[in-house]
Amino acid sequence: MKLDRIINSLLETDLYKFSMGQAIYHQFSDYKTTWSFKCRNTDVHFTPEMVQEIKDQILAYCDLRFNEDELEYLHNIRWLKGSYVDFLRLWKPRFLDFEITTDAECGLSIETRGTWLNTSMYEIPTLAIVNEVYFRMQYDYPKLMKSFNERLEAKAKAVEDGTFILGNYSEFGLRRRLSAEAQEAAVKRLAVVKSAKSHFVGTSNVYLAKKYGLMPVGTMAHEWIMCVGQGTHRHNPAYSNYYALDAWVKEYGVLNGTALTDAITTDCFLRDFDLTYATLFSGVRHDSGDPYEWGDKMLEHYAKLGIDGSQKTLLFSDSLDFERADKLYRYFSGKAKVAFGIGTYIANDTDVPPLNIVMKTTACNGNDVAKISDSEGKGLCKNPEYVDYLQRSINWRMTHESKPITDWEVPGKDR
Image (cartoon, rainbow, N blue to C red; front, top):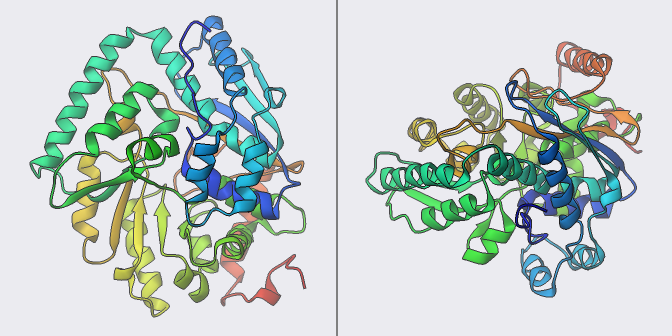
């Protein structure tokens, strides 16, 4: 490797990978998935030297194991069980699951194939490695860090002096961070900001949460809904949210309950977010579409169910900066518990544009899977015919289903 090791601990991933990982281990351990990398920036090119460094860094990551101190930390997270922690004691990444080539328009192609238990864990460290390699090898990195630190300090002071009121907010930037150094600097600085109306509650990076005594934050991602709902031909994909919510409640009950709404559109999600789930889940997360329309829609849904929306959390996590978060907080404050997960703006704000890179599940058990969010361009599926099928399934359900479903009416539900 030309650079220092980028990932130094298997804790250096987002918390929801462990939350989903436990449920996968207990309920879907035989599922197999394919993940595909995509760079959405049209003007970015990875050189062969960068690709080789990425390979070397991922190979180094695959040599890591959990140590007992890390496992004890995970065991103390109240919804993680001893059986899963024991599995992690034996687990390590498998480099043979990776295929890394230069066969892509951007110069970098990455696919991972294997058990969902394995491949799910690769997403976040892989994206963090790609980001850091690119920015260190493409630019004058010390100059980037200088601009990063200047902007970070301006952010901290704007929160301290009350320019921005954010309520409870967390750092969600691991996958698109400038570097490990930059993310740690941001977490360390924001953790000591003093403000009466803005509270930095934690980070999705479990390693940094442990290091600085912060709350690790996060519950589920789109992969959960896509794989649970679409990973078997027995399921009608328009009911993906039902299957995913059902399996989550089976695993966690009332713990760890923030539901992601936009895997196959929020309107379709609301068909399955009935009184039971809306009561059990402590809140919902926004990740695409107009956040004001979404929040109002969620509050209206809670009201129709007879639930006091002011006791539920609206977690916003889509392309936020402090100005957008401040406006959302002022609009929804008092109507609901408002929280923010802010990523790139905190972890990769410099004088150059950040990368817009993703690594998404594209197949599960040999079946195509897809996301149809509330914003165009956020999905990644290799089979347009499947996306069309999924959209038609959703449209049929939204047009023809006139009443809330029960367990007995769900297609493919085990009797």
